[in-house]
Image (cartoon, rainbow, N blue to C red; front, top):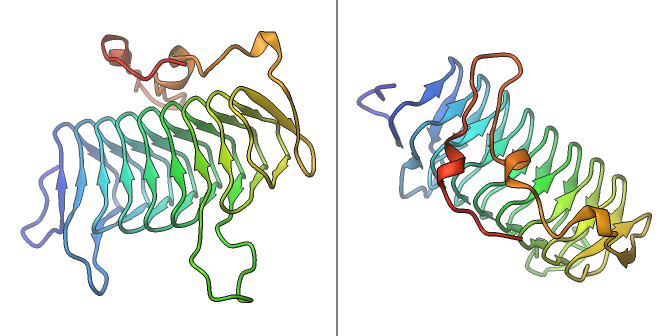
Length: 224
């Protein structure tokens, strides 16, 4: 895709960008164009703000909003109707399912899976105190089930598994299963392993098209 002369984005090679996509959305005070690596697939209705940097082999679904000052690593997927507010950091090999909300100052590590309808928060007393917002910090190889609520400022330790529907209101130690409302902590069962499987997280296949990418097999990603 050859950008128009007045474009405020830099797009890598072999990109597939649907009609109705906005790249490099300008806002007051922006200072750098959107930069997206090679082999991107960006579906219709999506908007990506200026001052955002995204790695190679990025994919997003329809009507995804990615705001400013966000850094996203290589081989990440953001599914339909997700909202990523500004000032986020997301690592490599992250898969975010549909209808997820990530507020500013959230940090997501490498090889993380976030289930559909999950909501992250960044303020314990919104509109009731003048304090900086504080997003959650999700370490490498975490799995978060569908419909989870992640409260402000908490850390979810490496390799942990958050069960569907949980409300996580305190830090989760590494390699822990968190279940319930509020989430209770249990040892990670033997059958859950110690991290997310690259053969399940990274192939980025498309059930409704010919896209199938196995090139991840020749690359190195953070182990569990």
